[in-house]
Image 1 (cartoon, one colour):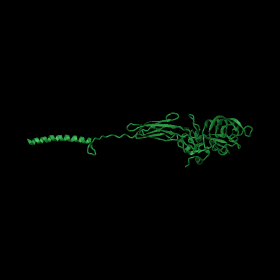
Image 2 (cartoon, one colour):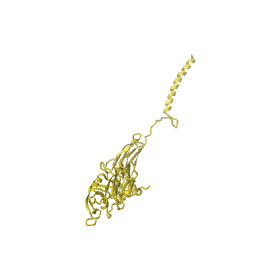
Image 3 (cartoon, one colour):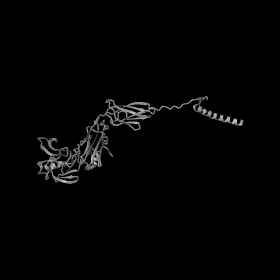
Image 4 (cartoon, one colour):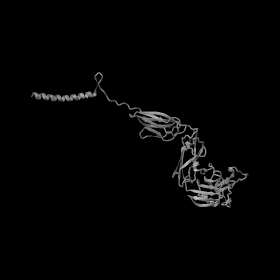
Length: 403
């Protein structure tokens, strides 16, 4: 019995011992020893998140097409406001999907100051507001790009000889920068190049006449571009032209005949009279640049005025201008007897009334009149449009971008 009793007491003490050990374990988990051996209570505290850090770019005297960017570290952007300090209008922009960057999405103005205010929050939701300013450059002059030809009206098309160009209202010293901002896209693709006629005028043409049915898109992305000498581009412009069927007239001063080719096939032939020896017609490709049912032709416009030898003033019909110094294809009833046999005009291509009307009905801006054996020398490059007088190699040398 004593043995059995002692065994029972050991079991009861064993249960109490387990409970005591558990309590001791809890006590140990809640305390730690100090340097003097006493127990010290400890707790776990999460450190605060770092504050959001906002940065801005660019700074002062920047191009108005340089985007304003706001970036954040250690947080997310909540709002960004960019305001023109003088006008009060806000600048559009977008926050990236990750909330880390805001970028302006529209150009700024010249000579302006913009106030930038950015709000951000860190990982704890604590807000930060930071401010900055951006100033844009003030040009000495702004160059406006006039387009050649003018943007077409609805349904207007141009011939295969059409020259495209940009004329600035101030001289350009950094022609390379200007040319890089001009893009021509032709469909179907055709190689082409720019040629600077002078400090204000640059023209574009392909190696050969445009293919019939081509579309030509000219993008002048000049706003904010430094064109040298304190001159910056005033605006961007974009226009699309369409090239219609190929119409080429071939006027021969020897035979006094003009063959009409439509898409390369001869469809008509007309007797003509070109310029007489004293006023010969220029040789080479001419491009029709204007078309009017009637024109008053006055020699005084080029210096031969009333009372001087060779003066004339008359109204001519069915007129298509082929150069700026007074050469036209037009009707002249007074030279019908000479048409096909002798050259007696003041430099124009004379036709009979019926032929002139036919020509007027079929030829339009950009169509080509190739003159040979007229004795007037090549049409000058500057004389709208003498561009086709240059070989392709010569034309390419006129580009400001070398290599």
